[in-house]
Length: 280
Length: 313
Image (cartoon, rainbow over all chains, first blue to last red; front, side):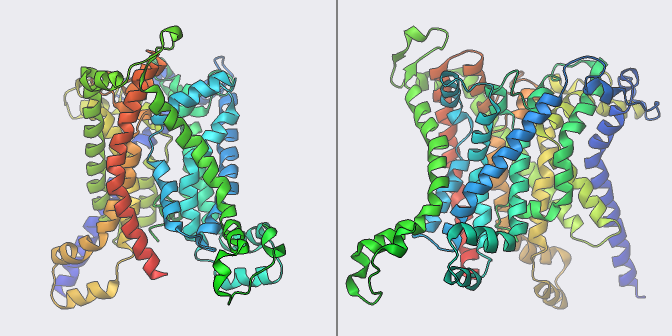
């Protein structure tokens, strides 16, 4: 082996180590949060921090309310209803729209696509007050279905944009053949297009789910006792003092778990989706 | 939609065919699948904004609803002259620019590292993505209580072992504290997009440059960086859209105190706590104007991406 080959390999190993170091630095806060969640409150709040304290499930027991305190279950259920409900509604509205924009190509389809994207650049705070006043007068405050509608409007532009780029890859000949055989639009969408574009649709659904699950501002302003979502439940810990550190960590981890699991399972799809289908 | 098939169909060769009602019907049938989504978006996003615009011209405190009256541009004058509000505009700009630039640069460096082959690359990638997948409120709580706490936080714990100082991070450097937590969350996102860009390079072109004796730096400067340009722009654009609107981190870590209140937090506070509907709306409209400025630039970037994709198809 020549000298340069050795030097190149040594440099490769060195940069690999730097990458590992970066990965560990970025992951350290999460690892530390996980470790703290298994400590007793007394061990969690020591200075300097203890790496070897005994492990316990007290933080989780405390979080799930078996030792008193508010139960997180209603908020977890609300988050599930709001996220799954709005994701379903988004797909129902976005699939036909994406079909019109990619397969049939309505006139000025790029303008329509840009309209959808431009609504995404309208900040949430720009419509928050009228939505609040409307909900108050209509008796819809603290109602999880209002969140379903709002989260749908939050994610629909992204979904239309992503799905039109996924549907554009379905061969037109296949769609034509189905239509010649007499299939109507809903049948074509459900039987021909949906199965072929399934990975793209799954990525879209995943991203809509994550954004809805994470949302705080609408939920904070529009819900209270009944329809409180998991992030709103977490805001109860903002002023929490040392005695509840393990509980805070357990709560944060449990509530992040659905997003972490979904994100790890679909890393590649996540990139493609987050860049609105522009990066392939 | 069935109307198109039952309506008398004009011969496609007829020159007047375009003016036939059936053609118009067919155009509507083409548009029909688009309408539910379009109507939904207009109803849920555009109508509330119009309402915000109208409310912004009224002096309206919800605790004194009877005193509501039209004041023209007074709210805007007040928003623009109020020292707190002006500082929140500045905070928003500073927060957005800092977080986007720093996470873009860090994301680029990490993407370059991960683009190389080494043992455990996929494990490292998974470790690096994790911060982006923590629920934003949970991430903010993690930084506030678990890392920054001056008594038993991890940062001061680690500093303790090397005999370093024990600062109270949030009260001594509040904005930096918020920025650091956001950089931690957004760097993985930038890395993912740039990594996708790196992996779409043409390996033959790089090989040819190397054969011609180009150094690592020359390959990076003249081949990789120009290729990455649109991916960097895309990351900056998407990052800006989300960070301009950031509420979770500011609300959780500092509750807008110590000069960290950005515009979304200020708008939230002026109607949720101060009940000043008119003022809040005027501030909201100003956020929109700021966003339109970013968006004009942003849409141009996206449309250039889009044209490239269109020409490929």
